[in-house]
Length: 121
Image 1 (spheres, rainbow, N blue to C red):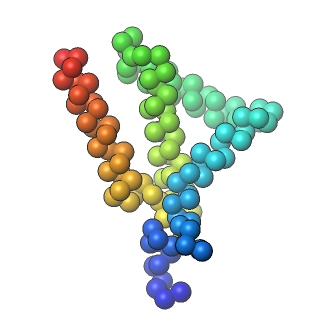
Image 2 (image 1 turned 120 degrees about the vertical axis):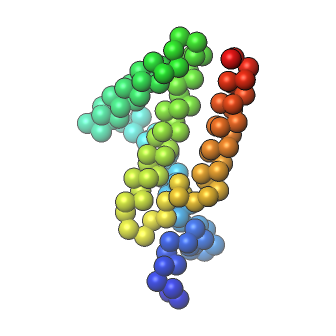
């Protein structure tokens, strides 16, 4: 190891495979596998969180929201939640702190909200 802080670089890799960017999709790989198991405490708690988030986003969108439109917001919330939670562990680079990840989420969402506002108001 040449540099003490090289573990925080987004290009930290083994066999030219970036392990830090793998942490972005760790939650996506773990959560769906619990669907096929018997409901455990974690599964029940996660379902209650999803139902609560669904109800909150449904009240924010109102009756004009399309069916399933809350799914997008819940997915984004879950992705950012898992990535920021993984940042609490040592030697893991959080992809949400990287400029490309933030820009890739922020620009399309901001642009779509602006177009939605221009069309409907």
